[in-house]
Length: 311
Image (cartoon, rainbow, N blue to C red; front, side):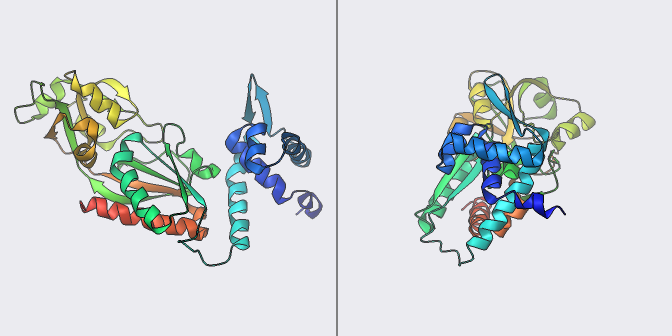
């Protein structure tokens, strides 16, 4: 262990690196830390000399982090979290807590979960701030970087995520899958058969953090592949496309029951075995050292149980 080299790295260096990995901007980093851009540049220069790595380099008009900087990200995040825990050993005071939490979810999940969650949390902790992002803007990688505290994601339970083992996935509630179509669709007034389902074109949902859903593989093995003619990133967009076309959209039943985009559509049971689907809470395992995050976790699971029970 090189104690002399380690002594040259302070929390200031680690926090600056942590924020730079998030912002990729010296100006934005300086604003967040309430220091001057020259101060950030000086701190980065010291860290570069100590680590013998450029850490960030300019590519056109933007900064890009080096492989070493990206590898250091989760470790630095954990070190800062541990130090914060040491510095705030007092009991977590919900009523007076004025910190902020960052969550991410698909836009389609906002109607189902975000509204009851905000109502529940803000009643208990009126001084906190909730930053709720679209998963299209900040995905699963944001957890390890410390940008996000939690992600809430609908997925096939057999769909293993393409991520590292430090992330924990916990099912909030399970759900059914249904098929949505326009009220004017030729199938709208009759029971849906597997031949009907496969005869028409479909809308698919893409998510780079998840593998191919079980129901797609099951359908192909037992019958044949469905014809996905349009791929979109979110349920709401897919439902909107259904309104004026003969495209079919397979999605979460709980979402379809509450979403405004789905109210003008006809809902049908799926005519095949599609496995199990769920909404899961995802977080970076070491972050549970923070009592504030443990409290928020408890609130999210409580709201999830209520939704699962239809309350």
